[in-house]
Length: 404
Ligand SMILES: Cc1cc2nc3c(=O)[nH]c(=O)nc-3n(C[C@H](O)[C@H](O)[C@H](O)COP(=O)(O)OP(=O)(O)OC[C@H]3O[C@@H](n4cnc5c(N)ncnc54)[C@H](O)[C@@H]3O)c2cc1C
Image (cartoon, rainbow, N blue to C red; front, side):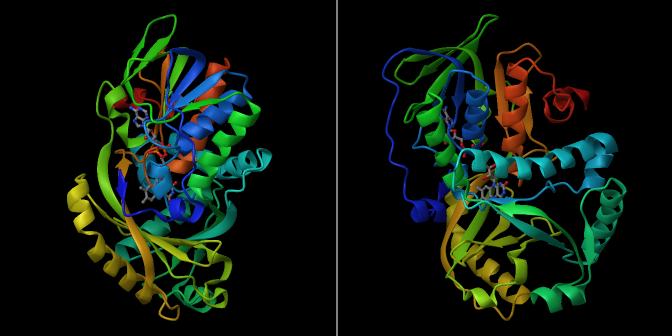
């Protein structure tokens, strides 16, 4: 799943909680997965008055959420002008706008539950890596401003003067991004709902079977215990394949590192999140402790052993890229890790039932913006189970697989 200890588990220490399922139980909704997606879904469902339980085969939130570099941006992996070409401009803009709103929503959710997950609003700098990138920036600026989405063009010279950032060309910037500690957010929300909303969390409980009929669902774990419920939410991240009738995501490998702490006065102003137009892209952010987190250098394969062998080389490449971009900031990697990453063809998540009327809801926030998708999924599913309509299933639902 990931290897090399991710920074967040070391910084926050492992959340000590061990509670395997020992009996047959019932619930209104059972959520498979205790990462940021499952935690947010359970939180919204508890808030809506559902009796919920969360099941995870590992310790709480130790899947991808513990490895995440947790930049929150309203831009998804596919630039808006390309997504518009794929699914139509209206739908693409709605997808982007949903991501924009989800950042504010996440801040509110954490604040209301008093979860201190180091959520901080930041500017975002999306710089052109090369001349092809300059075209992307120009097209993105045009379509985003036409739809009132936040976007500002900043020249190469201004990036150098204001941020000490040495780029090939200019960038598209906005002030709507944020950073968070996804591990702290997930563990904090689950802890809140266990204490305030009767949420039950069963760890070290692997669900091996999920069946549904018109009355409800039955989950069975590896020891034969069952959970009878009205609905299931599958928030099992990239391991959700076992619960899906068909494969819908591509698995790749990604790499991340965290630097030694840097003298605060040397960090770039505003501590913007920085990423680029190249594919795969590199990206960076800072932490509360004045470290720099950097990631990227993705490989298009899923083979954990091969991925792990490449880590040392990837770290050297990332370090070099950082020094090219910020020659005036001293930078040494302190620790590094690799992770599996899931993506979809259109860069959008899969949220909702496989087919209308099903009682199993998938909440699969695949892509570089997985966390913003987790917020959207939690709110869509909670609204639906509470009897409300959400037209965004037309964008994020499985129906788009058969529409193509
Ligand atoms: C290195 C890296 C960097 C990233 N950077 C960013 C970023 O900057 N911004 C961003 O938005 N996203 C980023 N992502 C993606 C983001 O981290 C993920 O989208 C998000 O963490 C997924 O959360 P999740 O809860 O869906 O999955 P997970 O955190 O993987 O949780 C799924 C859980 O399901 C459990 N599970 C699976 N199968 C079963 C089963 N059969 N029975 C019981 N439990 C099961 C697993 O044990 C796991 O705990 C990054 C990912 C990686 C790896």
